[in-house]
Image: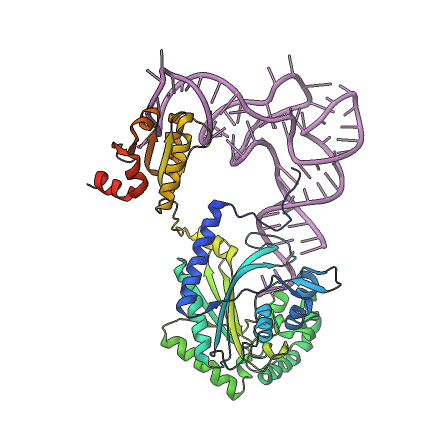
Length: 430
RNA sequence: GCGGUAGUGGUGAAGUGGUUAACACAUCGGUUUGUGGGUCCGACACGCGUGGGUUCGAUUCCCACCUACCGCCCCA
């Protein structure tokens, strides 16, 4: 094989693409119900947009970003996630301006890029769909976003969903907690895993997330963020919990849950699904949180925000493992069978006329025999076949056959061309 | 970036250091003249991921690379 697709990329073939369309259509419909509108931002941005928001010492920025210098010596990066670009666009286009209703609610669907080792449901080019809402600190907005995420996944037929909830508090709370956590872990420094040793001062919250047994033993008794929330943060978190309950949405609080990105504050959440398809037990399918400092970080006015992202490939793996059926619309109304070369112009005209009238129609292009054409019609699951041969050309009548019943009648070309719908209702509707 | 497993036609796969690489499915053609989902017959890898090497000879042995999958790291 001469050429092959780049490592970690995938060709989405027509059959598969139908599933993608279903997912995208469903998502758009739901987002629309919640009054979120699509925003399309570039697939690459200035490197700084991402390094600024993700923390430039992080592995993410140094190891996993597809960054490059373009011919004008600009340092660019393929977007590794959706939020940073949307925030940049929010600021650049002044969506914070008074003429825009607050909160500004947007969603995006598209490819993202990460330089990492491919595995099932994890590729270098992958797709995410996500939402962002700017301009309100109200806990009710947190809950709307969470509810929308749950709603979306339920629409995709996923059961056994679990909502994990945590808060990181505001900056003061987080700083206080961070200090306490370092104080707690430092005496055990030598007993931590190598990774956690480096994490301890760079990003101590991540130690909580460690899967290493050596770390877990300390994490168990580590101080909890929940004990370091100031009044404001506590109030916000309580309100979120209470509103979730009002909506009848169950949740479990996981004080050790942290996010990979530095910019989160207050509410963070993950929606997990129970499936063996993506590893044992519950795995995260949708994750998000509040990022009240992010807009400012990128040079905009102080503006709160909240959003979530969802991996489409992972979603597909889950749906398939769960046995969710994709309602696929692939109907062929009529297949036009032409017998003999002389019928070529007529069959083409008829297929075209059918399409003009809103029917899906197809014909043979390989000069095959009638039998083969009928076989094709059958395999394509055509509802009707329209047969034209020399005799039909002379009489200007075609044979219309309902494939399921086998009933066949003779109909003038004109009727077929002008109103095939009438032909069907007049002759085949019993 | 590290470790493990694998790579034969459109698909699922069998197989061997040596003339024509099983079998099945799919596809296409035929089964007497213009009608489908059946039967029967036939066709279908210039080649066994790529590139080297060993050998009289390699798809089969060795090495490197590529890719996929699994695990680690990480996870926006």
